[in-house]
Image 1 (cartoon, helix red, strand yellow):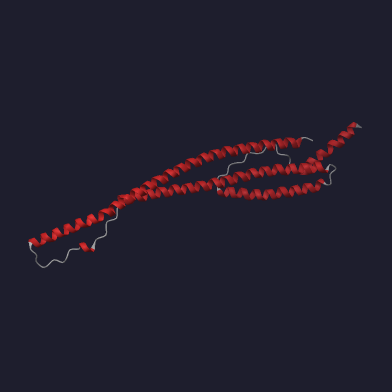
Image 2 (cartoon, rainbow, N blue to C red; image 1 turned 45 degrees about the horizontal axis):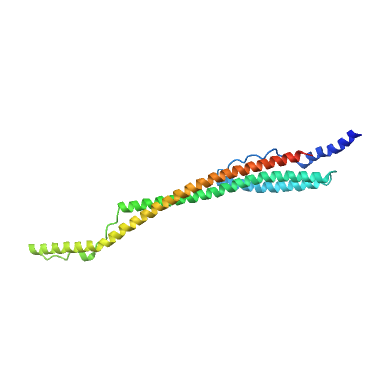
Length: 235
């Protein structure tokens, strides 16, 4: 009599495991790293589809449970199967979204660094190749008469020299201002490069911390999934 009672208790549990569908996962799998935006988008799209499949399978399993003798036990096991599979999909989703955020930061930092290098190169080129000053119409010599004396030529030469000296004196503030502007742009360029380097260093540190946090989260999820799976095994 005792043997018949034992079979009556254990047999529905064995049948229940076959009715629900996928077997319980022993430990959460490690998620492979994403290597491109296309791959991340594909994984996120697949996660969305897989979630719909999981929900559909759960609804079908739940409906079948109402035909079983142990209805509540059957529904609880179906819920646990759904929870484990959704946890796996969540890990894939978290990893793909993390890659997309990290990639956006890297692209922005590269653009900033390239802009700083371009500005520095332009400033160096302008300093090495200054534009020639525009000719001053007032410095054009007056038409010479058909015949001039030595004294007249000397006087004209002296006048041109005085005009040239006066023009150079007048242009001195402009040249000084251009030199100061060049030094200012050079200092700004060096400052931007230093900021970019600092941001890159900060980004690397954040990446390292994020990677450690992700590993810790994955390990925690793996441990929780394993514990849940072990608990699901127990009658």
